[in-house]
Image 1 (tube, rainbow, N blue to C red):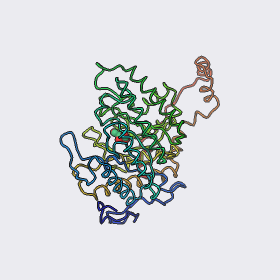
Image 2: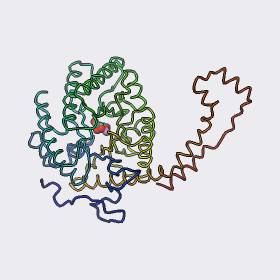
Image 3: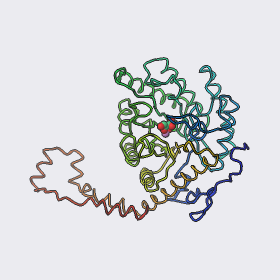
Length: 434
Ligand code: XUL
Ligand code: CO
């Protein structure tokens, strides 16, 4: 054991009445909900980068955190891993997620970076084997180092494209070796700052080819997890190609990859794209793309990607209702891609942030599941479309023609009668459960 979380107890479920800060009030892993354990519904993951690699900087100031593992040596990388797995254990989370750059020091060459990653992968493998926290997903950080400033796969320099291919291969290998359930691609620099120096067509052809190679490699090594793209409209780039779920779907269709790749939807990214989180979830499910979620909100006033822990049960309930409607997670889960504020210096702040986030999500899941079980909302939705079950109406969708339908409108003197959409009534129903 390291000293870092000294004095912090194992976090356990104590129920809604508990006043113990270091306990769950709602997250009860073994509680059965809709026939499944709560833990298996939520599938929580801790994000290595925000909790263990982020120094606490913002655009106006640098490091605020003093962590004993900050530095560029392999010994410190191992200490960081020790502390990280201690926190996973204290929280009892089933999963974690990481980028290569979070877990190993950058080497002087690609070969050295690769060796460092492989060494840490072995170190993780032992910890995974000896504990109960597994890998939800791995990914490559192709946005922090200056080599990526003009993009990774979409870079005008073919050497960067090659370096990106080698990097993703190494991260897919690590993810595969650790039994990861997904591999994520988030293209923070896959976009542009100005169209004046950008060839959109070339860059999207490069991105399409790159993703095809990722999919080919997945099959080559027998990786059974899902490949996920994480949409985001901008930040750090002025405009990012993976803008939102609909844009990603268009891209996948264009390159024939819509059955190979799904999406990892982040709450804050959905809002930055001008959507609600539930919109992005519902759309992904309807397109067959729903994979996983990053559960972190932005500050609604600042308009930045502030990556805060969730604090709003009604909003999260909308999200988990869509997750339930989508049939729940398969390989995906709820990753807290969230960081504590830069003034939250104490080790216990890290723990309490996750305890709160897990409880908010658990509460939201319970509310959403109760409404789902009640069934009134789905019945109301079904009734609204019930006219489509009649054979003459079904026929319009299957082989109907404009002139044939026009003839029927005339013959039967069809005169549509508007009906209430019942929105307030449904909002009242929703509020009975949330
Ligand atoms: C950035 C973001 C990333 C991805 C993984 O906004 O969400 O942390 O989740 O690269
Ligand atoms: Co994210």
